[in-house]
Image 1 (cartoon, rainbow, N blue to C red):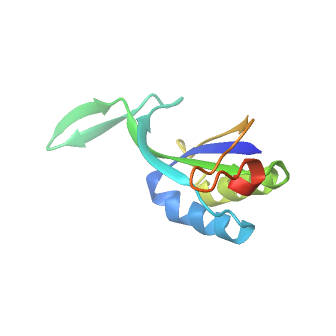
Image 2 (tube, one colour):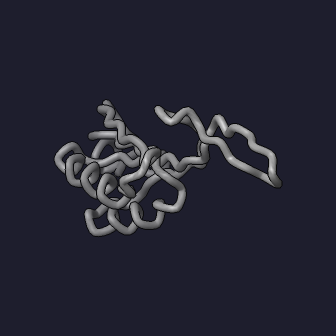
Length: 112
């Protein structure tokens, strides 16, 4: 099993969710986060005053899938979240050693 964690622009969330549904992804976790990458934030002008925004709003999506589905999920997220502009985000993939559904006690792939 793989944990796929993606940091994307907030307005791309619906596109990513719609791209994952046909692949059979049955659940995901979404968090509103703030951060910066290479762009180190951005400068904005508000009521004539210029100020620097260090942390930009982002969305973090976490989804656990079977290892054989991971490449398809990564490709779907990448295509759906792509704008071609700075700050499109990143995708991280981690191995999941074990999973358990608390309600039923199912483990590993049955718990997904």
